[in-house]
Length: 206
Image 1 (spheres, one colour):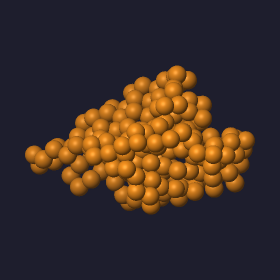
Image 2 (cartoon, rainbow, N blue to C red):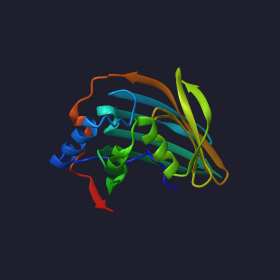
Image 3 (spheres, rainbow, N blue to C red):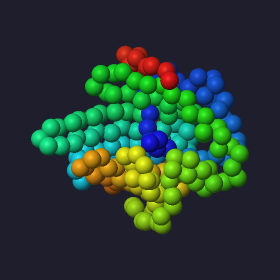
C-alpha cells in the first residue's frame, strides 16, 4: 500500500527553478506539511525490529529528509536496510545507501492540496487517499497526535501531529515493529547542503 509520508532520498543539486517556484506558490497559499517551520526528529525502532531513524526538514516540510536504519531478525536470518528519502516540493528521491542506487518520483498530490482551506483538511485528504481511517488521539512527546489505522499494506498505524509523523506501526508476516519519536528539536540550524545528494547516486525516474 502507499503511505503518504514517508519516504524519499537524495538530490544531486539545489532546488531547480521549477521546485523553487512550487515552493513559493505553496508558501504563498499557506500550505504547510508540518506545524513548525523547521525541525529534526530522532526515532527509535522497537518490537520485532531494531534500529533508528532521523527526519530533518525546513520550509514547513517542503524540504524533508528521512533516514532509516532497520534490522529485522526473522527465523535466524538478519535483514538490514539503510535508506534515505528526500522530498523537495512534489518530487521525491529514495536511495538504498548500501548500493547508491535510487528512484526519482513525482507526486502531484502536494500541489493538489492547494485547493484545501486549511492544513488540517490537506492532511486528512492525504491520509484518507492512502486508505487511512481516524481512530482517536495519543500524546507523544507532549504533542497531541491523530491516530490513523490502515486495513491494507504493511503500515497499519500512523500517529501524526498536524502532519508530522511521530509514530508508525508496521506489520509483516510474523513481524510487528514500531518507529517512535523519542526527541523533537524545533528550529535547529540546517545547512542547504543537507538537502543535496552525492553525484555518485544513480537515479531511475518513475
